[in-house]
Amino acid sequence: MKKRKFLLATLFACAILSSCTSLRSRKYEAYGTYLTATQVEAFCKAYSKKNPDAYYIQSYLGLFREKTHVLLVRFHEDGIGFAQVVTNFYVADIYVCDGWDGSYSLAVWVEGEGAYGIQEAYENGKISEEEIRSAANKAEKLGLRRYGRLAVPLEKFTFSLTWGTGFDSSYDSDSGTLVKTNKVIERSPEEYVTTFEYPSLESLYEKAKSLPLYSYPSDYNAYEGVSISTNPTTNYRLTIDDKTIDAKNCPIIEGYPEGLSWSAKEFLEIVFEIRDTILNSEEWKALPDYEVLYR
Image (cartoon, rainbow, N blue to C red):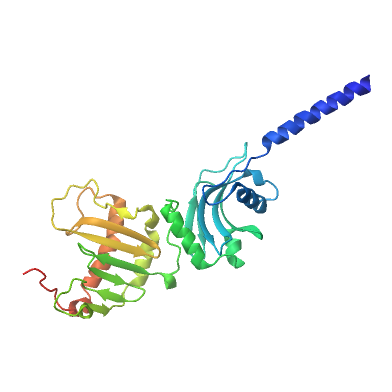
């Protein structure tokens, strides 16, 4: 009789443990239209042999070579917490994206082969620099790049500035091409194009590194909340490395108006420095005067 009671108790305990285990077992679900439930499960099990059920895909940053996926992943398990400090992910001198705390990681999953941290994947040729830039571009569109800083070294640093009501003038540091205007009727357009070597690139680079570049939206109203009656206005498009910011309807003024925010002033200081350096150059002055477009 005692043996029978013991056997029943053992079976009951096993049933409870089995029930708890099944409750803890995760049901994997598809991630949007990017990955099926089967693929999500395969990734998690490839990424973590020890605890795959605790990893969740937060964002999908790209598919390359038909089977290489870049994923922003979060670890979540009851009773385990992480410091609430934003993590910035950098690979190959590229700022890729942010994770909102220490539970986030950036993964590369090659179907049928394995899953890796993105740094390991890059070092072992599983993903290229061009593909990482593409993933960063997707992260930008998803609003996942806000708190990082410019990561490229000076020798890779490039910028361009386009300005004018219709974005008529431009300079690109990579090619050295300077365009005074693209609105030409009588002259040849080539007469308004020259080359220019920016004279203080290192100084500009240091300022760009200190700028919270990725915190600015692509369409940036630098003068928001500032009352200015000055006319006319003009537009600026600044690109530093892979980040482009359009600042439209900026008053043509000397100095900075009262009430301008610190972040707006910091951004405009770089814009105006580039613009004024170009406008004061001998190369710019040697270009012909603007045509009179309307007589």
